Image (cartoon, rainbow over all chains, first blue to last red; front, side, top):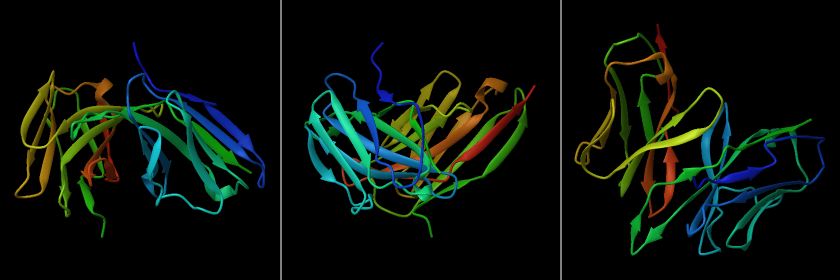
Amino acid sequence: DARVTQTPRHKVTEMGQEVTMRCQPILGHNTVFWYRQTMMQGLELLAYFRNRAPLDDSGMPKDRFSAEMPDATLATLKIQPSEPRDSAVYFCASGSLLTGVQETQYFGPGTRLLVL
Amino acid sequence: KNEVEQSPQNLTAQEGEFITINCSYSVGISALHWLQQHPGGGIVSLFMLSSGKKKHGRLIATINIQEKHSSLHITASHPRDSAVYICAVLVYEEKLTFGTGTRLTIIP
């Protein structure tokens, strides 16, 4: 049963610390998305990759957030330095865009981040 | 004004009732997703549609591209259907823009 995995599931850290979240997309999917969910803003797209290349990261605060795909099986989202307003649930999702047809996205379980 | 509007924001119904959740959007889209977020936080994609109607079990999703409107229906609702239902539109190939969600509570 293929699924998107995310680690850690929960993270509590102090303001100013670096946070790294990891995502393993479903094998064979060529598109990976990072989303953030807060009570105030709901779900927001932060960044996404296709075939490991970043396509859009306009939703991310550039000064502190960075997203990478070191290989096809791993996507990372880093926050440095973290701030209390970064507290949220961060979801990774993967999908396929083949010959212009977008297939459905599969969501990971999320990383619940609390920055004190 | 949000690009994606959902109504109602909250809905409480008795088990067995027919449920309708609405989604209106203001931008051109290539497709629309209906997502279900369980109380535990997990998100499941229920439907992705770009025209007409899709059915899966007791769930039916319809979309009217001309009117920029979609509906999600649940027949014979059950307490396990209690969740937040989120409409998301696909803009520029893959970018999803989300509605604020409808919190559904089904009372036994």
